[in-house]
Amino acid sequence: MTAGAGVPVSADFRTSLRSRAASRVRQIVFPESSDPRVQRAAAQLSRERLVVPVLIGDTQTLNEGLSVAGADLSALRIMDPDANDLGASTLAHVQRRRAGRGDSDSALKKMAEDPLMQAASLVATGVVDGAVSGCVRTTAEVVRAGLICVGLAEGINTLSSAFYMVFGHEHHAGPSVLTFTDAGVVPDPDAARLSDIAVSAASARVRIVGDEPRVAFLSYSTHGSAEGHAVAKVREALTLFRQRMPEVVADGELQGDAALSAAVSERKAPNSPLTGRANVLVFPDLGAANIAYKLVQYLGGAEALGPILQGLAHPFNDLSRGAAAEDI
Image 1 (cartoon, rainbow, N blue to C red):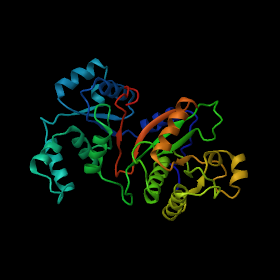
Image 2: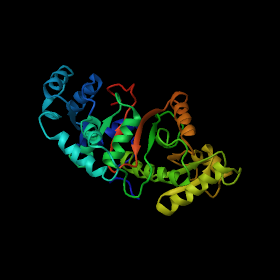
Image 3: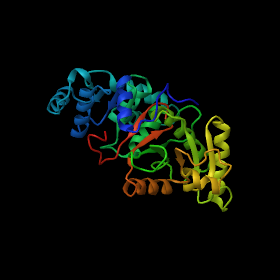
Image 4: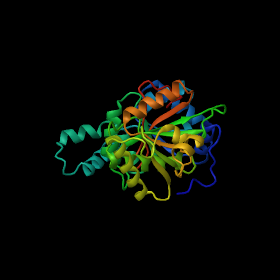
């Protein structure tokens, strides 16, 4: 697996992301367009030309709100369901996706009238390049729309998520960005799902960060220092991952220090191909990952970007309902 053409991991990851986004502008749909936070985010994006915001809603109402927010109306799109066939096209899409599932006509019609489903349908059919929602709707609703309308990527059976933990210049962490997965979706993955999560995270890292993924399957054991069901699960997940992505450097089971410290790796895992330089950390379950990212964020001073949903066929992302315009 090779990284994007000559894209280095910038010391200022957010600046790097913005620069790369501006160089290849994409259309991103926002189905929760009546929320003032979304309007402020869309206004900023339109002014900075980072993406072309696409908002679903009433044209007159949105134009008023966006104007107040200082948007460049020429640099965004509004899709008014009452002025085009968005409802009809969404209905046709969900009918195809749900064929044979036994949904009633009224249930399908209700789906098609939902802006979240409309956004997911636009992503799935290539009308737009991605979607961002979840500051109003729940994660469960966002995930459901993604699975129904977008579907999973080829070869992936698990929808999961990742946080990108970004460290300042003064921090001793080796990589300036670490991937933590899965901290948001799958509570207790078995070995096959853990392998799926790792495949999605490694693939996403190439696109988002731009470097070569180095994958560590974490545990309370390092190379047989302890035993147990959870340890065996991690070992099996590594085996499955290596079969699917043999070109990616990976190892496990590893404790966190052996995954991230060359000195500790030399003592605990001298034969590890990661040599203490992992940049994708695959946690054994959601509890461990969620606790770890919060601790690293609040005690270690890292910036947590995410969760980024991974494993879907096209980008369809979730937000915290407490998200600010800048987060969006």
